[in-house]
Length: 77
Image (tube, rainbow, N blue to C red; front, side, top):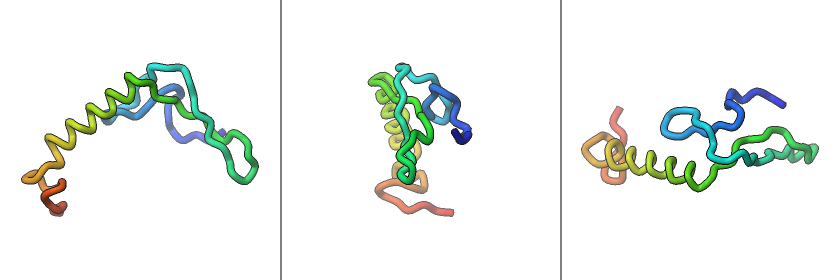
């Protein structure tokens, strides 16, 4: 399988690779051969809660109007 630089059993949450709370994986299937091309970590309820919390924090603290981006403003470069 190819190296996508995703550490095995980890999820990218809040800017860092973290251990998944579950050992489950999701198969990525090559549509041309119908063979497993890669396996990625599956997120459990705790992982999803952490990811949603991180996204809400970014939305509330970074992406709001007055910060240059967000629903009320355009990105200023």
